Length: 112
Image 1 (cartoon, rainbow, N blue to C red):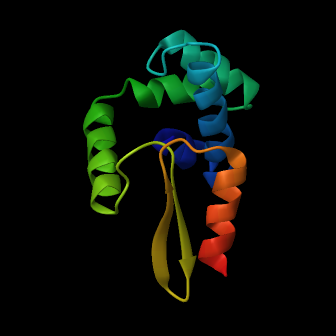
Image 2: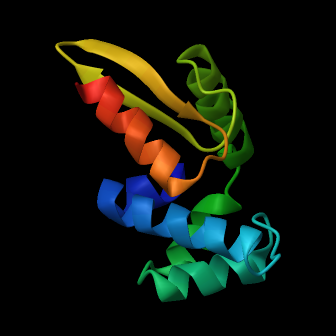
């Protein structure tokens, strides 16, 4: 998603991440497979050639490792993790899989 955000912006990266999650959790497709990435790129209107070139470029794996390290430093320990920020204070609301209704209740409680 880091590469998609750099290539296409944050909204497209969110769409890409959602579709990649669906490909993994629903379709059972590996997220680090070229065909999976190409298919998700097509569905989300991301330039697949540019994405795959960036994904396989020298240093891409190192940049990914750095992004994961930074996320861990910021409190991300599982997927998905959701934070809410209010008044300059960020609080973790969800870590790991929860039902949609539970997630909504946790978000509403954090924003109350």
